[in-house]
Structures are given as C-alpha cells and as structure tokens.
Length: 425
Ligand SMILES: *Cc1c(COP(=O)(O)O)cnc(C)c1O
Image (cartoon, rainbow, N blue to C red; front, side, top):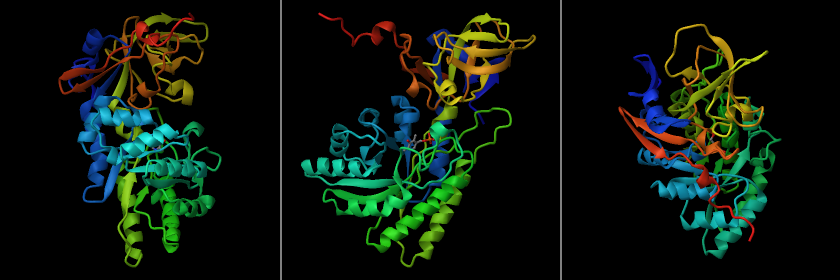
C-alpha cells in the first residue's frame, strides 16, 4: 500500500497532510515516508533471510544522510560511485566494510580513500583501472579486494540512457574479454580477486534479463574456478523497476519473486557442483528502494492558457527534477487538495528558461493558481540529480514518520550558491 494517500480531502504522507508540510517548509520540497523506505528495504532483507547475502543500496539514487542512516541501521551496505559518496556513508554511520565502489573513472585519491577506509570491494571496469588500483594499493602496502564488472551483453529493454549491459555501453569488461582480464588481475601482486559483478540497466520491469545475466556470470565463475581463480561473491547489480503509474504500464516484478527465482538458480547451480562452496550474493538496488518513498511538492504560480497548449507554471523545475526532460520520464501528478470542476489539459512546467523545463505533459487537471501539486514517485534520481541552474537553490527535504515530520535538508538560499565564488582582484 502506498504511504501517500488521500485522507479528509488532502493528500498525506503517512499521517501528515502535504498542505501542512508546504505551510511549514515552503515549496518546492521533497517529502519522504520513513515507513515506505523501511518496507522497501525490508522486501530485500526478507528475501535474503538466512542466506549469505548483502544488499548494497546504490546511494546515487538518493544520498540524503537521514536515508542512509535508516538503511544502515536496517542492515544495508552501500554501492558508491565516488569518494564523496563514501564520505556520506561514513557521515551517516554506515559501514565501509559493507561498501562496494562502482564506476568507470575512479581517481587515485578516491582509491586511496577507499583503501584507507577498508571498503568491501572495488568493482573494477577496465584493465587500466586494474593497474591503477594495483599501484595505489602497492604504494600503501596493501592489497585491494576486486571484482570485475562484466558486461554480459544482455538487452535490458529499457531507455537507452539507463541501459548499461550492452556491448555499446561504456560500462564493464566485455564478456568475451572477461577471462583474460581475470587472468591479468590475478597476476597483479597488490590485488585480491574476490568477486564478479554486473549491472545491466535500470527500471527493468521483468526479471528475465537479470536471470539471463546471472546465467552468464555463473558460466564465467565455473570457467574461472577451473583455472584456479575462486570467487567468493557474485554481485548481480541493481536495476529492478518501479511503478510510475502511467496508464498501460506493465507492473514491475515484485522483489521477493525476483530474488526467489534468483536464489533458486544459484542453489541449483551450487548443488550441481561437486563440493561447490557457498557464494555470497550481493545486490545493488537503488530505485526500487527509494523511488516510491518520495514526492516532490510544488505550488502552481500561474495558469497560462495557450493556443495549442495550456501551461501550469509551478515553482519546481527541471533543476529540481531532471528525470522528465532527461529521460522523457512520465511521472504522476496529483493535486494535493482535489477540487471540483472541469478539467483542462495542462503541461506542468517550471520557471527555468529552457523549453526542456517540463515536469509532466498533457495532464487533465482541475486546478487554480496557488494550488499544490505532488509529483509522485520522485524519491529516486530526484534530489541527487538536482542542480542550481538559473541560480535556484535546491529544494528542502523532509521525512515523515507517522504523524511527525522532520527537516532532513534545508532549502538552499541564493547566497549559499555563490559563496564559493570570487571576483578578480
Ligand atoms: C545506478 C546503479 C545501480 C542502481 O540502479 P537502480 O536501477 O537504481 O537499481 C546499481 N549498480 C550500479 C553500478 C549503478 O551504476
């Protein structure tokens, strides 16, 4: 059940009305539900019960410290893509020992920081990166735990910007080159080859491509074992989709169903290998943990009727929420206090000076200036992708817990935005 429901004529987050939140904190504001967050993480945790498995939340989806803290306390590890994200994990009380480091362009400084903090594993994406990591670890008198991100060349059938497992993508080591790359890695003196990983894309509604990728990883793990390279973990990445609510959309496969099928295959494989050692399974979910835990609350400034289109101009913009313009993503729009009357078809747009500044197109709404709207399912890749374009301070973030609401990030003010700038002397 969604934690964003209408009660007494107003949309609520858990037991707090979004109107009250707008009155207290202003708009635009990201509003999150703690119960939704813990429920989503719980779906993974329950499916992993009693198994050697680790859920490393892909924090680029939403890296607010309050969210990281709640997930860390629930037992999550983290999937990071920068040194900055590692510092966030630590600031939030997360465990670097449960943290894996993904990404194609890790710098020397980032590698050094991650080694100092004893992260669980580096997900390495290329041969030059292997050599750099080997050198950095050697210079510190250390060995770096590594996993190779293999590109299984599986078509995830998702938007081209979020498909990552095809040959044409910048990510990972090509499947056909993986064996040779593992041999190179195993020969480097300051690396410990411990795992294998992949991440084939995002917003996958079906688990068939994920299970296909699993089969290819399994095949490779067996080949490596025959060569004397024994892996201790298998990381299948993230990518499970969510329901954004567009008409005719296919619902995503439930987390428990997907993990059930995945573990069944792994169990059958391990049982089939004579004396096969158990293998730790790692997941890197982002969107499926946070997307439906948040909405972006925004107020209508003006209604502007047009010849071809009507516009509802709101106080949130593409700088607050990039997904619509970046991925042509469809996001639900709900009036916080629905009103009677005839609906008109609107494009919901922001004040930024770009025609690409839209949040939703062709929505039938009965609205008036000053009304509040909620952009639904905005908890993932919302605030983390926000910018300061047009010298707009980023939105406030609040979290609701039952009937309580707490500010978890202050709204930015213009002076914050140019504080690091200086004029020529
Ligand atoms: C973004 C990303 C994820 C999370 O993807 P979701 O689709 O949000 O689950 C996991 N692993 C890697 C390497 C990523 O880049």
